[in-house]
Image (cartoon, rainbow, N blue to C red; front, side, top):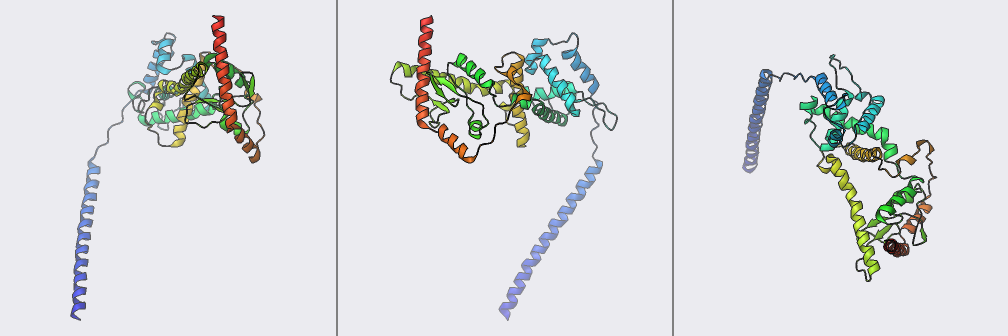
Length: 361
């Protein structure tokens, strides 16, 4: 009995200590909440700034879009990566399709930002990778408004131009791309459409190398890739002058192709920096927007290979392939013999091209 009584008294003693600690913690929490409530009542809010949005719009017009703008066409292109003509086309298209890019009045009767201001701040964020509040001094726009402009701009550009400037090559485009790549890089049939080929939605991409017809275009790749019919790898140990020439050409042109993303990052600094955007869909919209704008700029400069051949109303959809048909295509793509034959024929083609060039000289 005495032992049992001793155990009960010990447990009741420890329980009392816990109760005392809970009371102390509760009292401290109540005291903290009361102090916070008292301080919040004495706290004064910062008076809202009068940012003169209309004045910012007028200054923007004088600097870039007036009859005699302060900054000429070359300066505009350097600052915004595109011509004034192309910017106005994009701005007008967005204003016509998206109410966000129109001049509106708030519920408190305040005049909002113009569509030009919204497009300018979005492009500056994409071009320079600046934070969303960096445009406040010039455009008089809060960081939150700048973020809204960027998100709506990317959504609008994807909606308006994605079908044209993010599309896969059509049957009319592929010969033009082959011709351009062969003229610039000397490689025949340099074009890759892996998923489109497997899904049966790719156009006819057959080409000739060394007078041999191949069904699918290809990528130039390094040694870590598998020996597939749509990949042309370099040679690790060339044993004659012809194969050594192929190795040098393949590695040289492959680096040129790999630099394409470097060009994109240099033009649009937002993709060269850690993203402040957390949602994957918004990050994807930003990346797609950079690619679309890049392609639009090339077309505006007259440097696009196949932009003029696009006909939106004349696009056809190929019938979907069955699983068995896709497996047949996959087997053809992964055929090692085709890979080795293609590598040999490209080597012969490049060597013949070189010999012809030396004879012409």
